[in-house]
Length: 160
Ligand code: CTP
Ligand code: ZN
Image 1 (cartoon, rainbow, N blue to C red):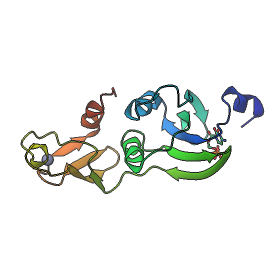
Image 2 (image 1 turned 45 degrees about the vertical axis):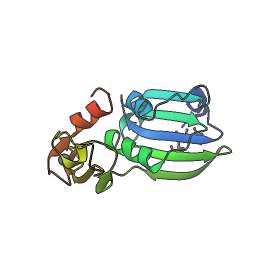
Image 3 (image 1 turned 90 degrees about the vertical axis):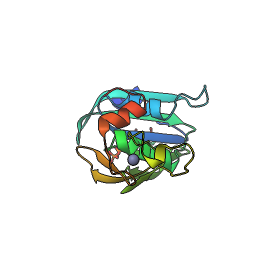
């Protein structure tokens, strides 16, 4: 990347860069992570920037944030191409591509109100099998009802 462009948004010192987000989805990523969390997490949101691999992509840079594995899995569901870059003292120490787990536990709820995972008195943690990544289809381990991307977006309270 040429220097002028790099200076458009500075490198971060300590934190996380979520790169290769499908163009237009950065605000959804921000929303599911509950950012900004006060003024602690200085952040940059870069949208519709050009990418050699993706055409256009979004990037979210957040200072002072390290993601939990649950948060990484939530990102995988809505931004399956994302890479998570961990930066410490300006150095990139880890880069990982998000991956939707084969078994998704405790992240989303089953849309079947009669499912055992939706009964208050039961303690069944919602569990889904990954059926297909594109289009995204999950199947409830208990009642076998399918969950689609639109259901997941609705649960996260976000648009398309
Ligand atoms: N980055 C940053 N601050 C740092 C180090 C890296 O903001 N101190 C950002 C870069 O600007 C880039 C991302 O983290 O958006 C990944 O950095 P790097 O692996 O160096 O870039 P690329 O080689 O372009 O990444 P990839 O191969 O994943 O496309
Ligand atoms: Zn169910």
